[in-house]
Length: 359
Ligand SMILES: C[S@@+](CC[C@H](N)C(=O)[O-])C[C@H]1O[C@@H](n2cnc3c(N)ncnc32)[C@H](O)[C@@H]1O
Image 1 (cartoon, rainbow, N blue to C red):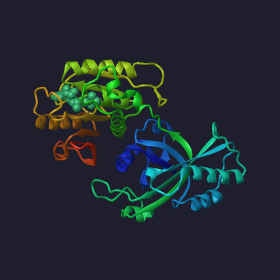
Image 2: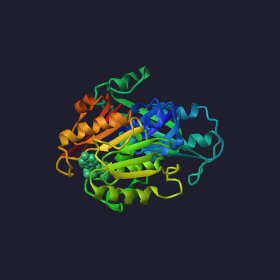
Image 3: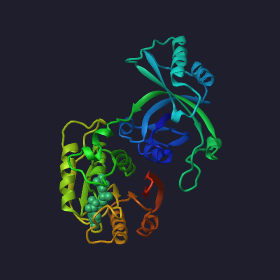
Image 4: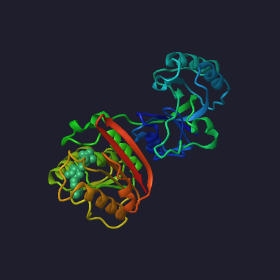
């Protein structure tokens, strides 16, 4: 079993993204989840999971319990070690420097040599206390039976220990919308773009379509995790700009920082309600609907555009992720989709983004 250290402010959303890289993801405490199996390549490309570690065990979020757990745990590793501890969201009373010292001492007592600079193995120790917020649909949580307390939304206190197995590549800052060759207001933040691309199924061998691609923010992130990407936009200015951006980020021969070959890309001018794409030709559709006041909408009112785009997406793919400034859930159902999950992400006081996951 693996320990996942989640990032961002919305654990349910982070766990949903992590499910694109890991099997059977369950949240166990604020900022922490476990999973049965992980793909290390896929973890490197996650936006809202920082690390996956081979779980050694878990106990309560205090140092004495953590020490006892580590003293008793079977360890089948050789070589040098380092302990890295984290107090998730500052929620526990455990000081991470003290935890690193004391847990490091346990490993020394068990015969390991410590190498803080270049260890063969890193032991992650994550301490977290608090309540788990419920999922949007009120299911409580994605918990198995053994997580009784947490599944009822009660307070939990967790220390999880695990050997670091994979870390996500934190290079999103290099792709801030304003630093891209082509920039327009309303471009999607690369973290959210990566997460929605992953949820839509972006990976080597998959084809992801953004029918309203704008500056290409989602396509870039999908291409960097290896998906072949296709984009359309109603405005020529956008398709030309997206081409510039995609050539810049995907038009290189060396593997992407996540370690996979960059996907191929194609962008052309088109109407999201009448796509020049064959039925079922796409694995996942992602789009970021125009925000009423922000984007120029060619030929359609927003009330016609989004439902039209939803049924076209249904025709070409069996999965879609829609980002918008309102929930289009009933329009999605009318277009033949089932709502698999819905998330609300508060961007600032006057802007909430809704993310719908459709199957
Ligand atoms: C919110 S922006 C997308 C931003 C994009 N995700 C990014 O990161 O730059 C919405 C886009 O939808 C495009 N659009 C509007 N109506 C359209 C239509 N009928 N078909 C295709 N694209 C359309 C707009 O030109 C705009 O670029």
